Amino acid sequence: MSHRVAIIGASGYTGGEVLRLLASHPSVEVVAATSREYAGKPVSSIHLHLRSILGSLKFTELNIEKMASEADVVFLSVPSGVSQTLTARLLEGGLRVVDLSSDFRLKSPSLYEEWYGFSHSNPGLLSESVYGLPELHRDEIRGARLVACPGCNATAAILSLAPAVREGLIDLEHIAVDVKVGSSEAGRQPSHGTHHPERANVIRPYEAEGHRHVAEVEQELSALCGRRLRVAMVPHAVGNVRGALATAHVWLADDFDEAAIWRAYAKHYGKEPFIRIIRSGPVKYPDPKYVIGSNYCDVGFAVEQARGRAALFAAIDNLMKGAAGQGVQCMNIMLGLDEREGLRYLPISPV
Ligand SMILES: NC(=O)c1ccc[n+]([C@@H]2O[C@H](COP(=O)([O-])OP(=O)(O)OC[C@H]3O[C@@H](n4cnc5c(N)ncnc54)[C@H](OP(=O)(O)O)[C@@H]3O)[C@@H](O)[C@H]2O)c1
Figure 1: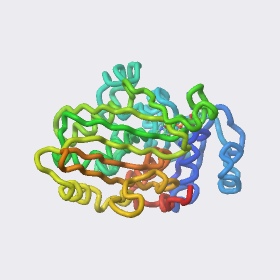
Figure 2 (figure 1 turned 30 degrees about the vertical axis):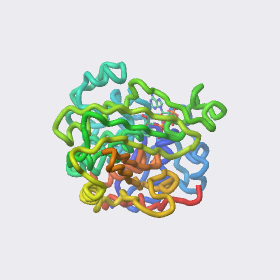
Figure 3 (figure 1 turned 90 degrees about the horizontal axis):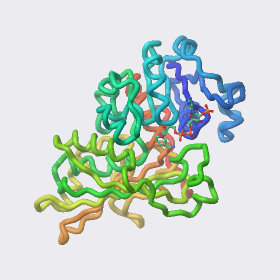
Figure 4 (figure 1 turned 45 degrees about the horizontal axis):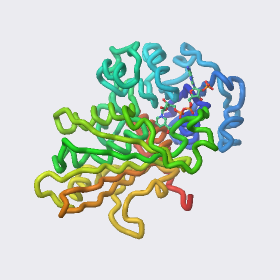
């Protein structure tokens, strides 16, 4: 049986990546791809890498009633603040929603005021939405109507830390995460900071105070350890187009050593289809270079037992495990499909 999928905001980077993945998904048919700017134009006129792949599919204007009659699932690949205005009507139309934006990630409406500076227009749906990180919420995603996929920096930060936090291996009072992320995280529209001549070759901290993803990282890690946890987190823009690396600096609780950390990661991630634990080889820590194009998250760690500290790493492709790939993984789980369907792309190398 083929499931019918629509994408709102399909002209952007994550929308394009959803289109790429669904083009070869064996159980899905793309029935609509919306764009306000390019309505009427072939999808491949904007996503040049998809030329001759998506047949005659054209961008259309958004028409929710029509979409509800044509599709079963809709991806929202739109900027923060837009999904909250559309989602209730999509759900009322019987659609299941995979939102790649931040609008339904946080459980408390007050967090939107605090971190995003807006008053949420549909707070009633926040309790229903499920945070779309399968490694933490697979069972809830299964029955969900509304899944809110994590931010790319948040995905890397949470996956680097989750087993250590869950097993109580680290000092929960002192966690500092440094994330390096490529330019595609900022979306298709250039701004002063993201336009190529300004962004190329940078290693530039940004939002060093109040990065919005901190809110979801704290929400999810707090739920894992059952207490309110604070995280210091600073993202850095780097010159790569794709890729995000989280390095979490932590201090070991009690006498936990490298073997305990290894056991915790093997216990929680050993059966995860998209997590690889990296510990050896000429590059013995995770590097986004080796996951680009795939939905893999590589995790690893370095332990300085004598100093009682460790660095925990997670590397992803921000448009894949950090956005569209994770969204397709969630969609597969929602629809009862093998969660690897449409995601069997291996990393490409060299990149
Ligand atoms: N890029 C990443 O690595 C990444 C990772 C995780 C999550 N996300 C999140 O995913 C979402 C999309 O990101 P992106 O990188 O794909 O952004 P993008 O490249 O800027 O694309 C967003 C698309 O949304 C459409 N759009 C803008 N305003 C709209 C509105 N008011 N109503 C309907 N459509 C609107 C635009 O298309 P038209 O103007 O043609 O309509 C645009 O192409 C964002 O919320 C972002 O935070 C991104």
